Structures are given as C-alpha cells and as structure tokens.
Image (cartoon, rainbow, N blue to C red; front, side, top):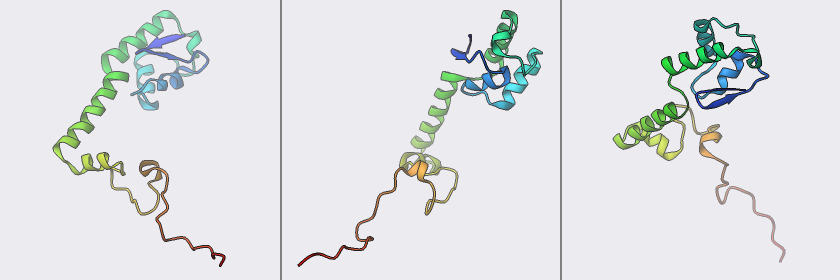
Length: 128
C-alpha cells in the first residue's frame, strides 16, 4: 500500500482514482500529476514501482497543498471572513448557504432537519 501525503491510498484502484483519496486532489489534478510523472493513469497502485511512487510523492509535495495544510488554510479563510464581519462570514456563522442559494425551499443540508412550526397542523378533534 502506497502512502502519499500521510494518506494510505487503496492498492486495488487505478492510480488516477486512488490519488483523489487525498484531500485537495481531484480528478483534474490527478491527471496533471500523472502526466508530469509519466505514469499511465490506468495502472493499479499495487503495480507501481517504488521509483514511480517516489516521483508522485515529490510532485505532490512540491506543487500542491494537501491534507492538513489545506484544511488549516480553508479554516483560517472562513475564520477571517467571520472576524471581518463579511456577509459570507455571517452566513457561515448562521449555518446557512453561503453562495447565494435560495433558502425558502431546499438548503436542508446546511440548515439541518426541518422543524415544524407550531400552529400549522390541524388540531385533532378532542373528545368531550
């Protein structure tokens, strides 16, 4: 099993898919990295030579911000928006969509489980 950027990438997957398990590397960056390293994207991770693994590690460490460093950077950016009092920061604080999406319907992922507002449901007939 190959370890790149502190992440054990799955041995049975093709390299172009396995690299996307690293936070900060998506399909596009994965293809770019493999092109720079001259590695066939459909090669399985278990079939990579030690030299090829080392080449991948060097390219990723040199050219890309990944894992903990990237997460810290994103967290600091959000914290800065909150501290400055920017609109986006306020939306982050409130747990609402940040990029202008509608909230009247949808937005359940950000807002959480729907809460029924009192007085909107029909009252059951009471026995007298």
